[in-house]
Length: 339
Ligand SMILES: *Cc1c(COP(=O)(O)O)cnc(C)c1O
Image 1 (cartoon, helix red, strand yellow):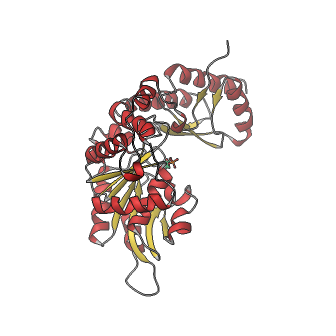
Image 2: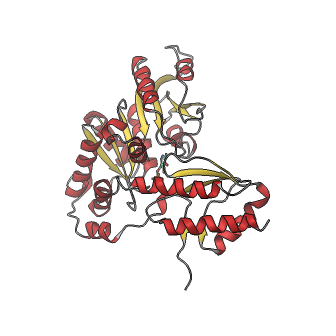
Image 3: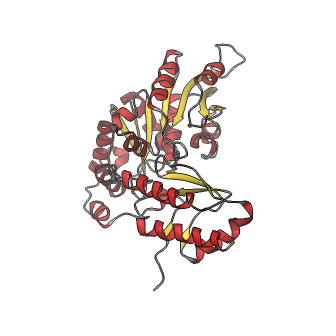
């Protein structure tokens, strides 16, 4: 019998568990464009309550949820300050610029994932016809698996507000950050005017994100969501999975973090491999360029899927059990021992 595949490319690869599928099967539904879907409404109310906001909006993806937030905070000719490594800036097709005429002001991310306050300060534009209007500071937590220091978040969001900017958090993996810090979800998003949370990453839902914010922001967001094609009908079927994820899969993220720590420690024992120390469920291995192809082949043969690169990102999740990680560590060790 061939071994089960283990997929360490991302925590988006998880499949709904039998209990989650049962919750989806049992979901009460209605037409969500009319606001009639009780399961979507419950998911939105639950998310708003958990994260400490007035309201929330269910969106088909994190990309759309972030875009809705940017469109709701910024108008044409406004700009948002964002990290050079941030998902909204780098990996969302330039949607804010393409669809919102919103100019990004990307700034370097420091080693801990933060954007230096001095850099923010130096890049908020004065009210002058030459400049775009600086409107929003967007941070990301976790970013590349790193948890933004709580003191930094407090300082940066307070500074932005003091300068008249709104604040948005791309909290695709904010639950990982909260679990790592041992704080409530509410405390983890303190200081932000809006937060986008992915249900389809480590939380294990097949699809969906929620955007949390003030009632006014979410009302505006609803209009943008419809325009972007994100108004769904009997979405309760998938929202039920998101609700199940929020109710059952937050605390267990600690297992993913422990598994990442385990795998990183095992790989770190291999001479010549440089491995980052994971804070959450994502870490990086520096694979010498001449070994990327060979290692990729060895992993593939052992039914282990990665996105091979000289800076290899490995991601643990609820469908990557410890046994699979032990197997992964063994394949790495065997490959490098034969050199
Ligand atoms: C995955 C991700 C998103 C976007 O989510 P999709 O559902 O894949 O569109 C946004 N931000 C971060 C940090 C992510 O990791």
